[in-house]
Length: 166
Image (tube, rainbow, N blue to C red; front, side):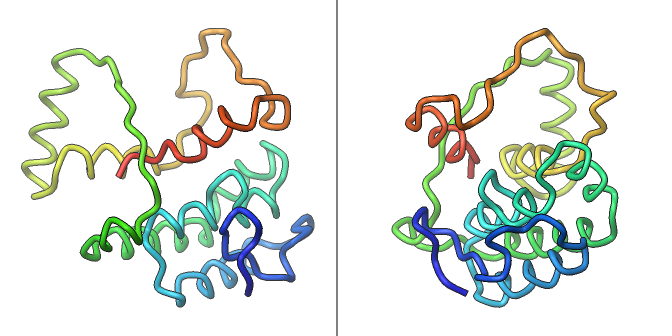
């Protein structure tokens, strides 16, 4: 393994990625996990825009199919285990960003109650929910679509990559 130009821990054998099986991607995710990274670094390197999953499954159809596999479920379990650990010192953490989400009071109250029942913060609960697979049929569209990453200014693309709210 080595660090790529953007700081990801990317195994040399996954550079091209296309044609890899779910089990092979899971094995490489476990290798990254064994380096004991911060959970956000693991997310970036495995599930993020430049991570091994998107390198291996480079179409939306292939990615959706992968997200229904046992390997994807195992990767999410590894991520959850890392999130359960005490946070690293701030200088060792992945930079975080803040988003504001407008939601009805009833949803806010339900989230607050669920966080209380799970003995966690609303922030951790919401991040957990954001990390889950959602069938695209369950997400209403409003006609707005971001251009592919390559067509966006680099600063805007980097802000989106860093948008994981700790």
